[in-house]
Image 1 (cartoon, rainbow, N blue to C red):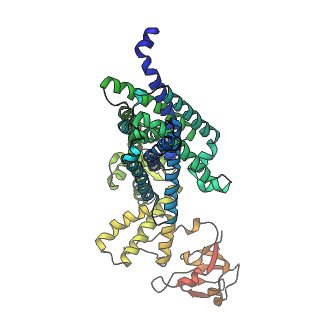
Image 2 (image 1 turned 30 degrees about the vertical axis):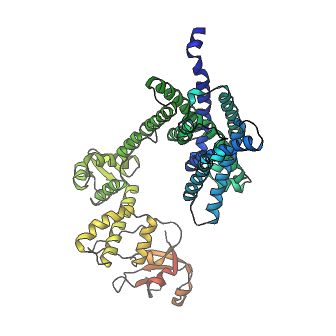
Image 3 (image 1 turned 60 degrees about the vertical axis):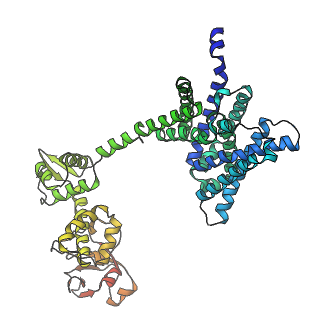
Length: 498
């Protein structure tokens, strides 16, 4: 044991310090990426230089003492809060967006620190190792840095535990959080203060340039692996600690910078998560897309089977008429069967009632789009192809709007009947949706149609339309025919007679 300590004892303080800092950075990073504050964390890291220098100068020039870590830490926190406050002020009272304000403020405050450091009148009082400030120096961690890491970790982790619920609510829905009485602004500044604390600790490992990666990268990896915030926080802490240990020893083996090695390791872990995460990785996404049958393929299968006049259709014929790879078509057939829209009969398929309903809706959308394209003078050779594309991207509300604007056409440009699902609708419908032979009871009559003398409860029968489908003909129980325009037919609300 004594031999081990004598040979490797010098690593205990750097490893303990780095582990604590990695864990607290990773935990806090979860809330930062959920709030989309990654760029702001970078701004706080850069503005820290001005705060450290201000703390140094106040202690040396005003108080006449030696600069201590506490004074520089306090200066860094104040600089971070000022940066966030200035970003908020500029965003709120100017036309600039937050990202622009962050870019201006953090570079400006960082430049102030660099400017003061370069002045001879102040430079003689400031003794900051700029190189290690930029790239970090975890190997030189001493007892003082270990205590700083322990105190900061205790404070920040205690804040996260005690204020977990407000942090969670303000991260996901700040409006709702404010509505239930949570002081959102106070929580934001509390998180900013914690970020300043962990940045000060993280700088000694990775330097001011790479410290943001220690905060963001493990949290981003955990975000790809979990849907729950509590699990995300735990995974982030574990990944941060593992990334530090692997990177630290890799740096020793390769003779590289420890801070850069730690960040490279965390980045490699992130890339592995990005590719192989069970639910949100690229591989899982590729498998999911490969196994998912496109909606347009399933709709094409329904349309083809519908055109077989209700008779079972051989699967070989479906494969022949649907323009897609056979593997996708077979997946579509089995998917539709699982959804109850198709049923198998040996090597044939047949539409169920539900499948026939959806197939008719598809045909209806296709023929309405063909009618619309014909009216907009689309070339005849392009009408079918464009309608085929549009039928798959149109929701039901769009189709109904199109039907109304076209005047509820009965046939498409090719003379084919446009199906209707009006009988399967619940509630009141407009009389303009009725087709020849439909019987319905008048329920409500709007002002525009009161001149026809119809009464509520009267059962009417629809006759064939006239004037190229632009005149609706309604037959009363007494045999009287009433001719209506589109708007007048819309003004009469009816329900079907069972």
